[in-house]
Structures are given as C-alpha cells and as structure tokens.
Length: 211
Image 1: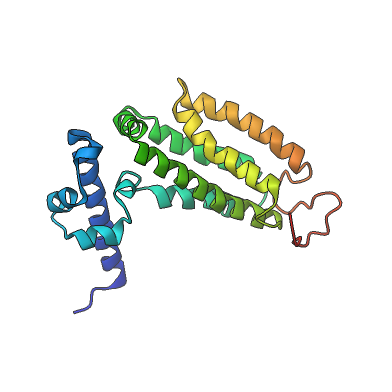
Image 2: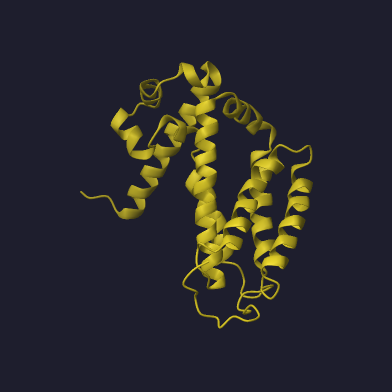
C-alpha cells in the first residue's frame, strides 16, 4: 500500500532529523574528525545510502538547518506585508535566528565549527549561497537585475550580520547596531524605496537589462 504524501514527507523529515541529531551528538562526544559517515549511519540505524540521500556531505550534517535558514530570509522579503519596509523585515528574521544560534546550548557547536577548517570552509560557501539567494529575492522585489551591485551588497551585509552578531557579547544589540548601518546603506542605494511598490526616481519601473 502506497503511503500518502503527507505521511511519507513526515517520515523523511523524521529520518533526516534523527540522522542530524545522531551526528551532532557523536561529533560533540568524540570530536568531528574522529567520526566517520559510517559511524553516524550505524548509530542512527540507517544505511549509508540513506544518509547520503538526506545529506550531501559530512559537513552538511552539522548545518542541518542550512536550507531553512536560506528560505526564511527569502520569505522575509517575499512574504512581508505590502507596506512593510524590507530592511526591518530582514532585521526581525536575523534577530530570531541569532537568538537561537547564540543560546548556551549552541556554544559547543560553534566552537567545533571554529576549530575545523573543513566546517569553516563549508560555512563560508553556505553564506555565499545564502547571499545569492537573498540577492535574487531583493532584486525581484525591486524589479531589478540580480546582478545589481547594490542588491548584492545589501544581501551580503545581511548574511554577514548573523555571524558578526552571534559572536558579540550582546547578540541582539549587535543585530540592531549592524542593521542601522545596513539601513543607512539602503537609504543611499534606494532613497525612494522605503516600502514595496515605490519606484525609484528616474526609473520606469521596468526590469533593467543590466546592473
């Protein structure tokens, strides 16, 4: 009997969560370098092929919420209220993410990441991918090309704010401080775009063909 889609997706999500939780526990107990993919699969009671169907690499096991982070930021742009300015919407989302990542329970995970060159490299590539995704969302919201330098710059600032704030003594205050600078940069780049639907001065509202 074929399982209904909803149940099948819930089972897949539960398996993914079990694998990630098992991996993180083993990494923290034994050290990231001392644990292999086969160790994680055996402990989670899944086949290695099942593990790789959920995670493309060992590094990805540590960043289980990678895609969720990326999608949440894009949705902060696309799903905000019609008259809500873009930068405050992104600040609210970053604050929520930083609050989670700066908790006491997350500290050992970030220490492990900082101590592993492979994990640091993976995190950097992940941030670049998230910045590209956010750039696309911001540019679409403004009716601009994703190659527009200002859109790429704002997106990179927002993504980097997460890492900078979680390392600060007061993460939420750091988010506010960083976003005051991002807001200032936004005002310089898009002085007429305080709310969705406003058209910059001198613009026809049509998507340009280049940056």
